[in-house]
Amino acid sequence: MYIPFVTFKPMEKELDTELRAAFERVYGNSWYIEGKEDEAFENAFAEYCNTKYCIGCGNGLDALMLALKALEVEAGDEVIVPSNTYIASALAITYVGAKPVFVEPDIRTYNIDSNKIEAAITSRTKVIMPVHLYGQPCNMKPIMEIAKMYNLYILEDCAQAHGATFHGQVVGSFGDAAGFSFYPGKNLGALGDAGATVTNSKKLADKIRALGNYGSDYKYHHIYRGNNSRLDELQAAFLAVKLPHLDHMNEERRKIAKRYMDEIINPKFVLPYVLDGTNPVWHIFAIRCKNRDKLVEYLKTAGIGTNMHYPIPMHLQGAYKDLHVQQGALPIAEEISATELSLPLYYGMTDEEISYVVDKLNSF
Ligand SMILES: Cc1ncc(COP(=O)(O)O)c(C=O)c1O
Figure 1: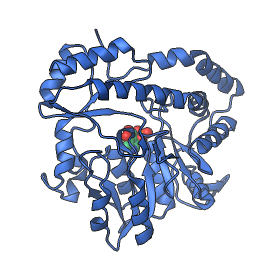
Figure 2 (figure 1 turned 90 degrees about the horizontal axis):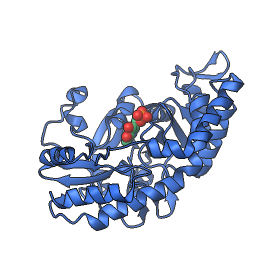
Figure 3 (figure 1 turned 120 degrees about the vertical axis):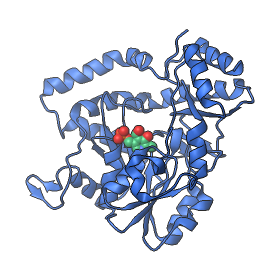
């Protein structure tokens, strides 16, 4: 049996007619950037996230970066970010000239440890960026309290958590703004790169939109030195097809995750921990194993694809050498990087495929 880490085939089959119709409609309209498809998707996604505004852009990195720019985060400022996220979270911070301050995650949830945030706050801290990693919501209650106490902004990184909830509230609706990625492999994925920022602030929304459109609030009037990062009509139309299916596709991911949680009983693995009151969307099903490399080889031989999120922590990446954070300084992030393995989990995974993965893992 061959089981890839991820495949889009079942989803594509289910939505084939609708996706092709969306393409035909946009092509027929001969209008490709900033049009009614964009507006329709933005309105629908804002509603889904229970926020007033959604501003589409080119990708998830830009969604975060434009939000930080709009919040006037700049050189000299610090942004608190977990030490174990995808590098895009930190890149958004360094692109605006600010410094990422890495805070270790809780080893159980892999999300930023709210008990460690206060110690990282300085007079330069401007923003806390919780990342709902693997589709598991962060512990937002204490994070919101700390932000309020120290008068800090919250920018949620929701790239992996479309539709996940914390005590019934959907992620993306907690902070001053939130960035989403619609990279094809995300729970809500485009057929190419795309992203969006959501917010309840009209002032922020207007500024983010202008910043992503060459800093222009009105054609050929440039009030900011902006970027070019807009959601195009084709991707917006594809996303609008997929959004109404997001909840049932997330529900299916939950069923697969439940089977893994119930049936993987090999004590060599640490299974995910679900924080009370959260309803994750299982973008990634992450286990930990001391013999990770051996396990990868074993599963590969059995025809099972896996992935690692992420094998090198950000502070040990060449890109962040100048931060001078040495090996050993962030032991929890390093431990996760050394032991984490992501199992296949995708919409349309069959019962037989799940059983096969479970059996192979239990006999490792
Ligand atoms: C946690 C996190 N933040 C940000 C991003 C950036 O999104 P994009 O790839 O759309 O730029 C990603 C994408 O992989 C991500 O996983």
